Length: 231
Image 1 (cartoon, rainbow, N blue to C red):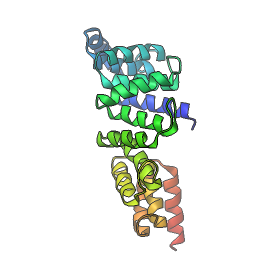
Image 2 (image 1 turned 180 degrees about the vertical axis):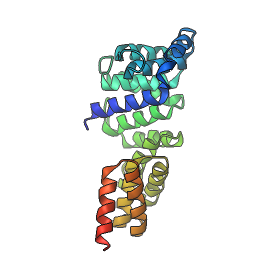
Image 3 (image 1 turned 90 degrees about the horizontal axis):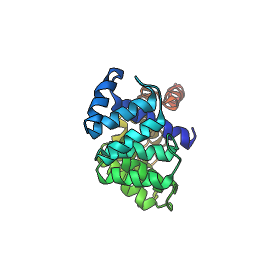
Image 4 (image 1 turned 60 degrees about the vertical axis):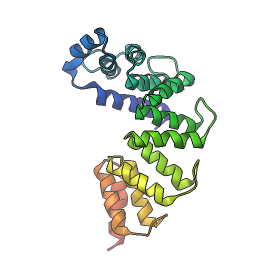
């Protein structure tokens, strides 16, 4: 999956989470017109995915801007993603970073995660592993499991922090328990290989199965392969 496709997928997921049911469009529109910033953000989500209204990324971006200007940090985060992906607005990494920063400063965990990702990739800013770690930590502390997952990877590699496999496993376990399929898969690999933990096929089975249940195909494949090797 390309970065642009991933960003679009994250935008759509965010819209689905915040958008509610299609018959809420009139309610959100009334709330937005009445000055409710969160209503504008939810309405933006409807336009982004075309739920109850024609799909219109430009209108989505405009509504996210109203929401952000009105103090809704979720709207700021979504607008940052629009600039990041070039969806509904011209692609502009500087604007993406500014809106992610505003969202993160307002304790919107997704904004912190996305800001960490920008620093990790060096996208619009010089690559800075320390800043990536700091923002992933804020995201994880705020309940964003992708932040916990990426932070686990930083600790496992010693990228931006001293290498600490135990901390990496603890963070991956938190992310897995929070429904992040990739973290469950990575835990399965960690236990199967004994990478930073005692080798434990029972734990590997458990986490591969959980990854599979969360639709991570590699978890399913490794579960079957590990089971076959035990015969």
